[in-house]
Image (cartoon, rainbow, N blue to C red; front, side):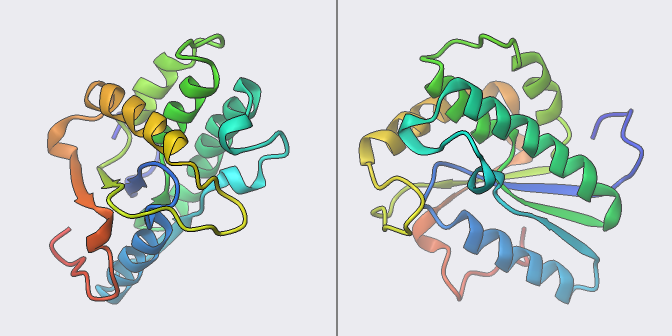
Length: 182
């Protein structure tokens, strides 16, 4: 974590495109950490509260709102527990932001995203090896999901070091997945 952090909460983000069991994984991991006797705060995916729009028609402003809201939530929750488990991080929200802005960074947020990415102790990237299922909120477009994954593939290695990244195929995140080794 950055030396300017006031607390020493361990921060774990589950990232990837939409519809790949991040929420399921983050909840299961949170339960495992609690069973180990640690206090946990859970940061839910903020995009669902976005008043400006989501999915493939989201504007750059909408995705900027998501990025800022993600950081706000993390600042608010981090001091409240020993472990902060997040359903998304700035890295995957940055991918959606770049996609909405056609690869450009009109508000110059990359330095903030780069610095904030260093505050995660572990980033668990789920890979989309499952078909998208409608949930009534998120897009079911394979093309849209592939575009986000391509941005993540290109940008994640520059944002988070390999020793702080774990990659898991989404299909293995089932009720029987063993979170203890994490």
